[in-house]
Length: 495
Image (cartoon, rainbow, N blue to C red; front, side, top):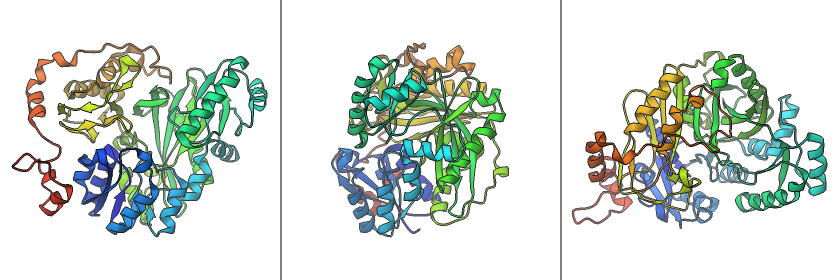
């Protein structure tokens, strides 16, 4: 491939642009009006406006993205995660237009894109699944299925994820209203009212398996990630290895083989993730498959030393995967915290606004995948993820200590973030013991430090406040056009 358009925004777009630069492949960024001055726009070789802020008119507008690829001569598109990354129609459109889609085939996406279809595929592959149903036709069918499975049950949207269209039902009296609410929410979020039902597992752990395969039938797994720390069914802390695997080492092979059976049944290639629920004794059940790069992929890269984005590009270009399953080795422990512009003490309410000062941690074993800077205004139009803070150390306790050190160095002023929540989590006895489940954060009240009172980082705050790492101004203080940065030698990247 000669040039790649990155059909995304924020930290993941910047991550992909950097990988392309390392492979000496020119990149094209796309942006909405509110993202005109974003870091991924500054970092790419070229940038194309694709519409106003609403994602339906920009990052979800497949036709405009294809037009941008044609206009710039891009012969491949990397979708990142979210937006169009798991859209089979978009993957097929790319193929029709002669553009390489850096991801799996449209057929594979369709086979596992619907949770109900993925459940069927998993059953055919002999993988354990949570007891449940196909898509529900009406309340009577749901009531009959729930009575057979046994309450409590969980209603879930067949398309999409992130907790949208999901409702727990404790008894039959709640079923009808829960179905209406879940179906309505699913339709708003994913354009489909289709929902299904499955057994609600108490205190489950959320464990996922990273797979990587080429277009010639060779596929491997890269181990598991524990993603049990969630708010509103959305992950906020991920780690590898899972603390459950540390207690039950045989689980890695068992769950990895189950993941591979499902991926092979789907004819899957490129990077993908299979998600499982596990009880506290290590019994696991297939949940769904994400046919894209995951937000939390850095923890797998830390512990395996395998660059997933590089391999995504290589596989899409037709290269064979040169890594055998026996070659995969896991070293140390990695933890990721998703830094959001939100208020954990106010039901995780988003906190858009202007960042007045910004200072990232650094040092041994620390990685920040970020997409913001001092002076950037966090828009209210998209997910409020600011950055991903990931650490690695020789074992889990050392990684927790390193994360605490990194959190103490992280400074974001002008908006509310969840950084203090992570400090409380890292000091929590249950978390440190690895006693995790998806309901961990419900009612959690960790020690929230007063981050503004720490005078030890005064110098870094002054530097962050005075450092304009966003759009460069000309000598008259006017913002320059992105096209000018390219012509004048990419001054925006010179720090």
